[in-house]
Image: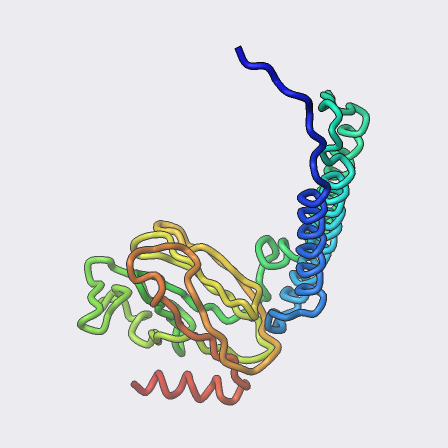
Length: 275
């Protein structure tokens, strides 16, 4: 039978060092965000600006909770360090638990209510009546974009006729006259300050359409046509990437969004139609 010897008072050094490390960690994290060491690119849509505003609200709320929690932990580590006294058991404080749970509920419900406009404008509001419709088809591991051509109509698709090697990756029905002037390209070109509606499709697995400057990210799901819309306000070239792990070539799946002046957009359509 073993007997415990007299309790030896612990050293304050480990508790102090851990509390100091936590404090330095919090200070470094706050500085990294406050100094914007890794800033996000500026949004190019009005909805994107709302998304950034909601992100800032969420960051401030979560950041405040992070700072208070970590500094509180540092204080507790040092204050309740081993002083040679027997450990005491606590069952907690029900009133305190109800209080901070209620505060958390109010904050996060408030954030959800505040962010409803940014989410709804891109998802649940209809596009403008004059929005340019463009079909986006995803497949391992490429994007294909289809414009309706001069007649303003998309041709019918026949999966049996899909053959990328023969220049028909989407399977546009050769017997449908509406599809003879459809424009099929590997990158997306849209005019600046014009509403655009994208119709997302997938030919095989779940893919994703993400442009960080649009603050727009939407899955493309097999068997579904998913509409999203935006209005780009700045001319430029922006990368489109897939954020779903869609297979071994996932990292190579990307394209580009080209936002151009109206005249350049008309030239683009004419040049593609002539081909």
